[in-house]
Image 1 (cartoon, rainbow, N blue to C red):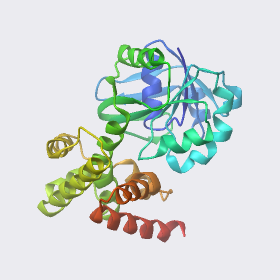
Image 2 (cartoon, helix red, strand yellow):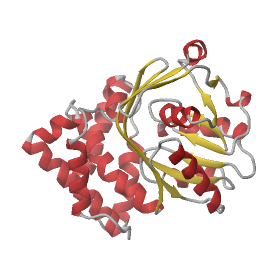
Image 3 (tube, rainbow, N blue to C red):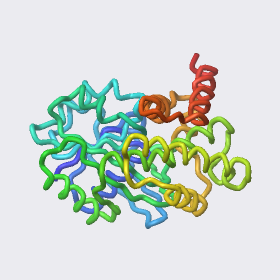
Length: 304
């Protein structure tokens, strides 16, 4: 299949590069490092084996790109207002859009923008960064779970997953709601706390007080998911997420990098939306609601 990558940062560029290196046709939308990558190619420094794409297909505008079978959107959700202009040139009647984005409620809002488009959610478990032009630093993990939100052609989802697997990307289809809330178990404590306390994941877990706080926040997410009727989340899953994080290299999540570079943070879908949904179901995420308020205060200090 033919792929487009919209949002060629640490996540989009990594998965797109893996697909391209395996021989798939991949088209990358680039912004700040477009000229660099056109001249020098795209480098992936990876714990699973580094590689280089000498001449990737790169573009400044989606208007210049072909219509594709799969569009992988890996933009930060704060930029989703750009989708009405970015996506249409890439879409055919049966294009599958994979949203590799953080938070709860993303697909519902994108579906409202594009009522007939086939949407899937991509839940990436990966430590990856792109802080220099044309280079992705993949530190650990790299799997991606796929949750079907509105695609009626299940064979197309299966084919995409098969091509990811052939490219060395551990991928599997999972229940949509379960996948989104499982990702929130990790995202909600670690993204916000690394910002509020100006630290990294390893430091949060090395300190007994913050390790306890991480676990309590994870259990708030588990409780919210259960109140909303989502299966598959329990204390054992939270403990597994903590253990996986202990085995990671010291890591700054995406929200911490946004804070460090004084960019808008993804507070709405990572915190506000799930907190409201849980409250409507009769469950209060008290500690995470406090963290949301702290994050909004912090962001106003540099964005106004």
